[in-house]
Length: 227
Image (cartoon, rainbow, N blue to C red; front, side):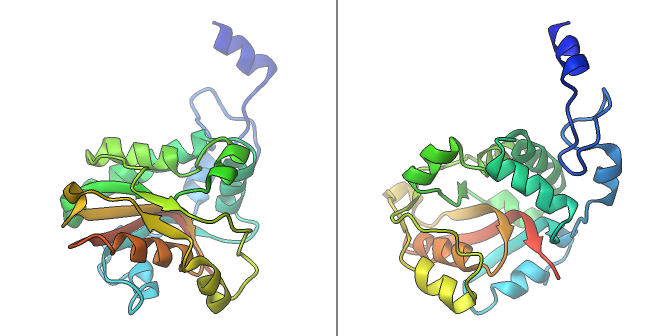
């Protein structure tokens, strides 16, 4: 009853277009759900994510759920998630993709889901890691443990979005490290993040994880930038 009254006086808006959500809609409206650009990369062996990291890191599997376009629905969703406290978006995307990824055979061999970590300072400022809900939803659907203590960020860096690929790579290369035990040897890690742009952050995280003897890496993200 209280929730109905709150919705009446403070109606929830769509995270994609800001329209008022109907009673049976959650986070994004039905129209945005149909219009949002889905990649279907999980259905392709040689997809764009695999191609992006070819020759950089040895990936077992890679995919992203959405295409990220400037001023598009996905950009608005990610902005609300990262900077406006809308953590429910992360869980929504995780449930959406988790259902699709259940049938990907290679992911049935994954041992841990690993989020790209925030530095403690950034985590304190934001109050949450924007990929946590995504990762925990994937964990529930794929029945794979979510592990957020193995990979950590050593340095606090400013945003790298305006740097070119080489500039980002130089800054990010030494940012991440791992704190692993013998039980982590010879395991398959599913590394997750929000948006793949140049791929420098994910490459650096993967190289840190590859310090673990016998480690294998897969990558799944919410979105991938697309021209």
